[in-house]
Image (cartoon, helix red, strand yellow):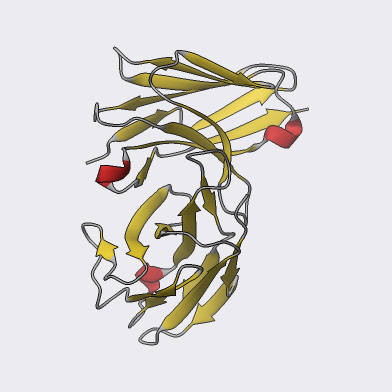
Length: 115
Length: 114
């Protein structure tokens, strides 16, 4: 199954700064997904990142706040810009495939605390 | 708009008992229904999944029951063990044309008491 490495695993950041989260997959995948999971809550899709095209953002998420790069088929980054305490969450990347024909694999997440 | 509703929010079961978690969906275009298990500090891990052409799927102690007409599906954990204590999420997605996005239910925190 696909193995996802996500960095950093956690960080504490000052408000107003930006943090870039990296997601590395051990196999080539067409689509990568970025999710946010607020404390004790479910997962909400931020955007879908396809290699070679602009990311597709879900309602409530904008590129200026969460710019995404997808330079190749195994790597993506999500930046959380101009952070506020409300951005404190777990951010997870995910890819389709590996765990069965339709399974989605998730990274371990980046636990972000904004102070 | 929450497209996948999950209940209960939390569940306490004795070791050896049955844990039952229910989900209901609204969008009939959904064609893939996975369940994920998440331990603290970890990402969700796929537990079991079903497609709507099947009414039940069993893998070990985990069973999905699917009712297409009612737009409901449920997870049964038989012989629950303390190691099953985790948060469980149901989810649903559509076919490739819709981008394969997963929509998650709200989650159920399961505690199995020894």
